[in-house]
Amino acid sequence: MSLQNDVFVKVILMLPNKAYQNNNIGFIDLIQNTLIGFIILFIIAFMMIKPIDERPPMEKHAQFIITVTWDSKTSDDVDTWLESPEGTIIYFKNQKTDVAHLDRDDIGTARDTIEHSDGTKEIIYINQEILTIRGIIVGEWILNVHMYAKRSSDPANVVVTIDKITPYERVLRKQVKMKDKGDEITITRFTMDRGGNILKTSDVFKSLVIIKTISSSSTSPYIDYGE
Ligand SMILES: [Ca+2]
Image (cartoon, rainbow, N blue to C red):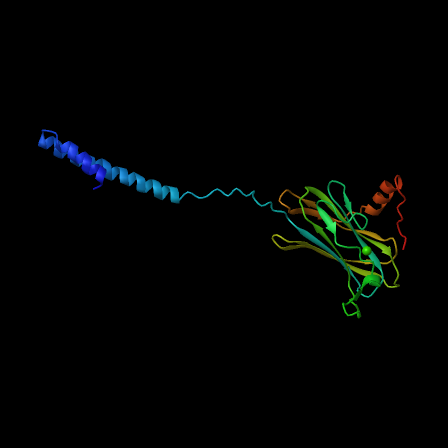
């Protein structure tokens, strides 16, 4: 028993009625034990409180990787064109936007030579453009390929894939042949919902090159098929 209780008990014992004194000592012990019980429960409850995470919730974005690959040893220049539901067109002159970006404009074998640190040069044959969709815009997206420069005599075999990253899913794989300079093909038109899911697709042709040509002609001349 604590010092405070000893003092309190001594005061109680000074009262004349012995029975009354004994009853009060028992009552004091009951109050004390109940109070200790509440304190223990309060400590346990406090320890079980989950700390509040003040960090903002991580925003999840669906990510799509569009890959356009064609014959590795040709100097043909295929271009990737993508129109978002808002009407933004991503292509070699508008490579970086808020929701999508084109990694580079592959112009064929002309840029396939790399120079190492020791000065030696190596040719890595790869003709490929990669376009990444980093956000969700509900509506219809249109993906085209365009033969900007046709330097080889054989038709170009162009393979287009669309991969959803989270969770991974191969959305599309399509191969087309492009014979002439200026050829433009709508690979797919796909409708995206709020969850980043592809609801439906079609391949009804819509020229994006012509749209950009017309919209650019009022401000600056757009050279369509120049090399
Ligand atoms: Ca290109």
